[in-house]
Image (cartoon, rainbow, N blue to C red):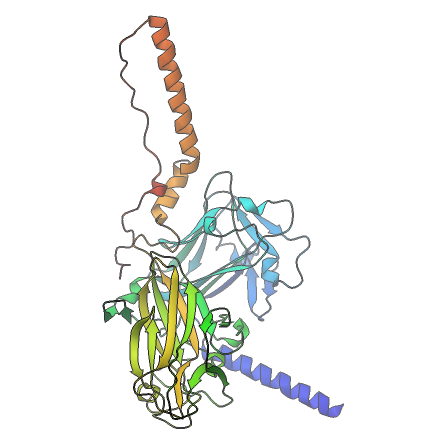
Length: 474
């Protein structure tokens, strides 16, 4: 019994040490965790983070709306985090404002989950805007389902305030949100330069930080799910099994040693230890090099560019200078004869990542592969991949979800909402037609009657706006 107690004490001490190390590694100057609709001053989620209720006096300045209601789930699911037990509901455009102490790139996460009760969440149709970006259009997701949705963004804030606006799509609809996170991003999280890979060219491009990014996939290749508790930026990394298309001849590798993070290289904020200490590899067991590739496929929305980040860490080679392999993006050669020891100052188990920008083509699928190169060696590791991140880049109108710009979304509401106005115009048209017919019958006019010009000013919600963020083009 004493041995068991000692073991448990040692385990909890180790867990606490790991948590303290993760927490100490990154301390963002801007760090807002808001539990929307909650009257509680603080709510601790499953990852031991403290969210502040937006009903409390300390957060009254965040919420600027005077026409909203707070809801609480009367019978919350015990398996869901407490931040999904309440919500803030809006029936007209409403804003949260966050004072920014550290201008630059910020993490913005929005949490959604329907609550049980009398409110019909199938009527939750809305847009979410943030500093000129259209983050989200709920029409693209079924909000009435009972699962949790986390929308994860990295956007630049060059002023002293970040404004997040919720706009119902129609006056008969409503917007809602369960929780909001606004966190300063590390300076090295996203670089300003990447390789643009396409069928006919592979070239370096600059100006990446003029754009915003939405995380579509964050995958721990060959490893387990990584929860926010084990990530210094509180991210979730899922396993790669769902996306792995071809793994013939590959194997998983787990590393129990120390990951050698280096100054100027990939940091723990770029990728945590639990991503870099697992991988999938191709290994030749004989004198011949296997002619195969490991391939992963990811569904994407066509019409957008994507930032693809591939994480590498040689945790499988027995010596330096033995691993050479090729990297392919959308079946195009992105990296030839990649030698990890060359890019990591000749250190094993040292992380490295490569950023590529690609176009979402008409297939709606983004494909990533690694495989042996013409420099691969027998009796050695011939390809490796530790992690993948895929981020959607905003389009030319500053949107991550459609061709409507933030200005048009707000303008639509002010004019009375485009979807409501079309039936009104049709009704006016019918009344005018009836008036013309009655007038002709009364006066006996048989010649042609000039058509009256009908009001045609309608909201520009379905028009392609001029680029509100003109610099946000690649």
